View 1 (cartoon, rainbow, N blue to C red):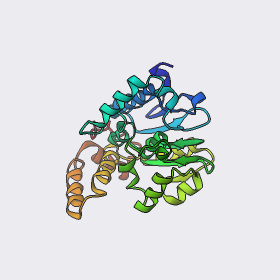
View 2: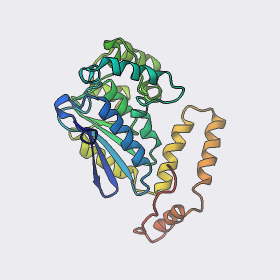
View 3: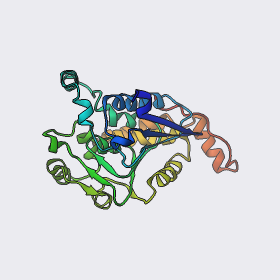
View 4: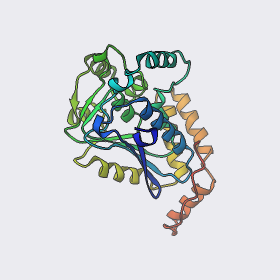
Length: 270
């Protein structure tokens, strides 16, 4: 399957669905899918007309994790490649799989169904919001293969759950359903139709100034684990980029009798 086929982008006006597309493999991640997801995130980050993204999986699962059968088919190639990425002093090719979605100045919502294991749950954690079916199956599964989560999982888990919960999930490789994931805070919402609910949430989160939406996302990501002084400095810095600019003026006009006045394209972000 060619790289362009492992991930399909479906555009609906200002929203893009990023669809993992190896349904016969439960969207197990191979190198083609890894690079296609990274390329999609990089290209969408530059799209100033984009207002929201929904990440979903075609077929019976969101993403069942790394497709070991495919990746290890050529172990002499795969092992050196993977090891070389671990030597880099910055977010590598595998970590960008999840972390790159935080660079998009728009809401990113993951719609989870079926299996969401390993690489799959780390991709979902990179979204701003996660919607899962109650019977979805989620697991930080790397321990089963003698590994640790290394695709951004450690950085992302700390924003959602207590460290004792994260340790239990990582060390046990336990499979939990959507209900338990929701109770733990891994999943934001439950829905029988997660794609439809994800679209509703994306619309709610992208209804106002695209610059305010982008700045709000980046502000919270920057300030969440910072000190009080770092967080308040970030507030001042991002607010300076909004006050008096075109989309802030349009926001005022929309609240003052011109509710249908269109926003300009987003200025904040890549």
